[in-house]
Amino acid sequence: MDHRLRVQELFLQHHEGLKAYALAIVRDFTTAQDVMQDAFVIISNKADEFKLDSNFMAWASTIVRYRALDAMRRLNRPVLSEETLAILAACEVAKPDWRSEWLAKCLSQLTPNVQRLLRLRYEDSLKPSEIAKSVGWSVNAVSVAMSRARKELRKCIEQLQLHEECS
Image (cartoon, rainbow, N blue to C red; front, side):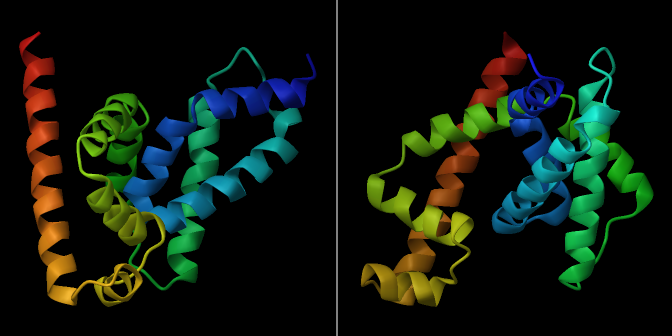
């Protein structure tokens, strides 16, 4: 298999962990997706620099980190300290998959309407007033539904976490 394709395959295998790391830094889904796209292009272009028998996550997370920091600066958002970034790298990249799995499981338990609201808010980055116009609800109804959805997600994830810790 071509070296570049193998590196791209590694990126896809570790995509969730890298995305969790980007999201922890930028704290915005749309920006995290942009960071991941930029990182994929850079990783593809620098594939020849990566040795297949070395630590892909360490190499790729460094690229993701710098892309995320560049995005934060470009958007004039506060940048996390080096110490905080190091902690995030250790935590987010080491065990990211459970969060994505738990979130997906908990999201699937919400009604389709609530899932749509969350997608509009967190994937499309719409404000509650824009969501209200989109779905034909009042801003207050959207805000209440989103608040309830977040509480349900938190409760569901906490239950999964408790179950995991007990097993």
